[in-house]
Each structure stands twice: as C-alpha cells, then as structure tokens.
Image 1 (tube, one colour):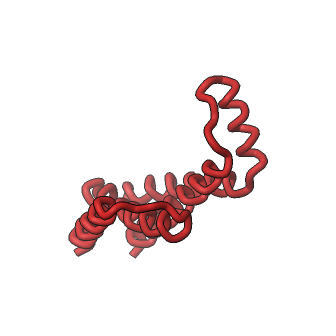
Image 2 (tube, rainbow, N blue to C red):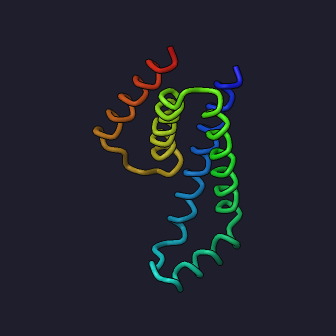
Length: 120
C-alpha cells in the first residue's frame, strides 16, 4: 500500500512541477545561457510563485522516489514512474494548449501499456 502511495505522490508532484515549470518558462521566454542569464533566471524564479511551487513539487517528487526505491525494486519504480509521460502529454494538450502529434499520442499510449503491465 505504501509503495503505491509513494508512486502516486511521485507521479502527481512530478507532473504538477513539470506543467507549472513549462507554463512559467513559456511566459518568461528564452534566457541567455551565460552567467548573466542564470542570474536573470534566478531573479525570475524568486518573482514567480508558480516556479517556486514547481521547485517544491520536484523536491517532493525526488524524496518520494528515494523512499519508493527503499521499498520497491528499481525495475518496478523507474518504469512505473513513466506514468508521468502519459499525464504530461494529456496536460500539455489540454492545459498548455500544445500541439501533440499522432506519433507522441502513440508513444504515450505505448508507455501506458507498459505501466499497466508493470502494475499487474
């Protein structure tokens, strides 16, 4: 039971963190990849509540994954965490209004089949 709870926490917080981060970074636009760009990005993070929440979600996900690895074999934990791919693809289309190609839908569907097989 705790294994499935940890997996659910990890998946939900990863998905939430990724969607929030993607949303905010699209609002921010491209940043320079030098020291000055990094400083600007740090300033932006401090000013955007959703980016801070995304970081918190990713930290929770990290610690939930560590706890999951203490209770379940890695051969289960890592592939089962791929459920994030499915949810993120759906949310990319519905929330972020991204165009998702048929190839990506097919890939997400295949991942869903793999996660289902692991859960059995």
